[in-house]
Length: 116
Length: 111
Image 1 (cartoon, each protein chain N blue to C red):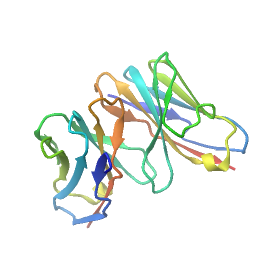
Image 2 (cartoon, rainbow over the protein chains, first blue to last red):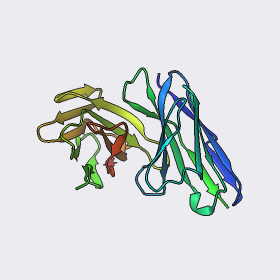
Image 3 (cartoon, one colour):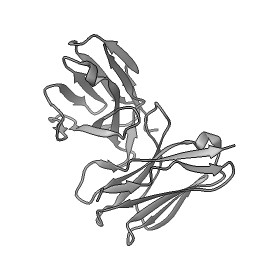
């Protein structure tokens, strides 16, 4: 149990375009979802926390107008990187928390974004 | 002082040995503690969580928690080359809603 999927697993786009990444909890209802970014050989960096039906809470330094997060249902959250630039190229990982794990976070497989 | 501290390693152990990974945390009121494993280029996967003082065993893994010393550890028995990865310690602070991660310890198991 406690499976989280992400789509797409990788994406290449041109600079200036927008990219949407989906995160789904497949076998449980995720009351809270988290979005992380990880650059090569660096630690996970939390970008934002989203609760179903409410606005996301962004970490300091993360532009909310650039990284749009929608948590429309208890099983789906999306991250849209708007007007992507090469410096946005990174590994984006979501995690979900809810039953059955209490406060345990389960991670999706990640999406590798490359902006040309 | 970092909120969650881990030795970055690499920690090298021979195959079949016990690997001991350590983590300290700053918030004395923290209640939930997690160990994740992350292979290069992959996302973290949960190994185990622990809430109470003492040991918790799951297969070859044992998590140990000492709240008085603000210390949590992970022991891996009979280490295998496939255990080579970065091990992340994560803590939910007393009034927090999110995981606070350590920087991770790189483990290398040599065959």
